[in-house]
Image 1 (cartoon, each protein chain N blue to C red):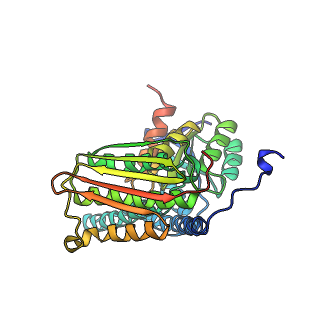
Image 2: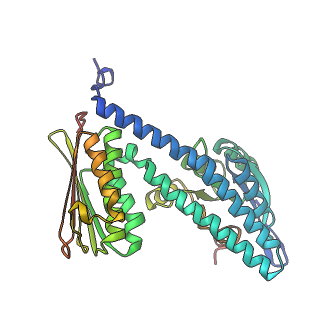
Image 3: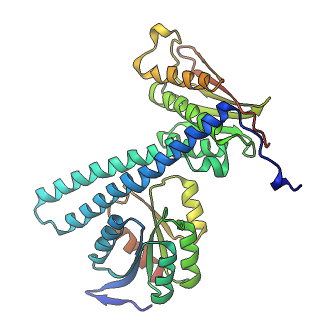
Amino acid sequence: MTSQAVNDCVIYDVVVADDDDNVRRALAGLLGEHQGFALAGQAASGVEAAEICSSLKPHAALIDVMMPTGGCHAAAAIRKVSPATIIAAFTARADRRTHDELIGCGVAHVFVKGRSNDLAASLYRLVHERHQPG
Amino acid sequence: MTDSALPKPLLTPVEAQLNLIAAERDRIAGELHDDSVQAMTAVSLQLQRLKARAEDPEHIALIQQTRDAADQAIERLRHMLFVLHPSSLEDDGLAVTLEIYMDTYVKPAGIAWSVQGDPQASFPVGVAALGFRLAREAVSNALRHASPNTISVKVAKANSELAIQIDDDGCGFETGTRTLKVGHLGLKHSRALALAARGSYQITSTVGQGTTVEISLPALESSS
């Protein structure tokens, strides 16, 4: 897990996971086109996401919560194989309880579908803060 | 014979029917998420990509307006998912589910709220789902029509019944059918649902003094 910098912008490897092809494609495109991210991999399930993270040890993973294996399970699996990966969740659920559960499973931040005005920039800020403390 | 080998108590016909309705609403909510919410989310994300590439200020503004519309649709769908069948009903029970609802949808309106109820009290899922539906409708009516400062909900299980009471300190209304406004037609529907489940639905309201809704539903399957 080494980050590189282009034009003073640190570039972080990111993995996206969503079982919906259209959402996964859109997330991959959005993050892949952001100057601060290099798209390292795409997964259609929590198990696949953990496998990719185990192999690539990306700086960040953005995971859907309602994949067949479940967001909490996926986050815990990623944490186990790649503890330094910053995990962000992407969910349709806006209630605090769901968010608390996800945070308890190792998710660093929860993005709510339809409420994430600039998802790529927000995720970048999160990952940069966590990987470049101080 | 171990506990797990004991036969489950038989459901009454009404409870069985309510369970079927709850299962159907759960299925619809699942399909709404997997289909409509995901499709609108993909649209919203692709519009973010398009906006980043656009240079003409008019195009940028048009893309943003389109995206705002998509996000509003997602917001409405998300609300519908929760209202149709909150997954916490099975996992955490009725009182906790009502707390989640109040925290998510009442608190942002700046209205004080409370939910009292035994989180361990267990009801057949269909009865709990109908109880949630009727209580949520009553709270929603208070939010839309009564301008209350406080809404409180009490959930209790007594004598094989689920009892829910919703109190608000809003403006109240005349309960006579002649004065029911269009916005209150939901009350007639709620009462009809409760009666169809062999339950009861009572409204007490005085203009200027708030409203109390008392719901009672038979819940014979007991584990509390």
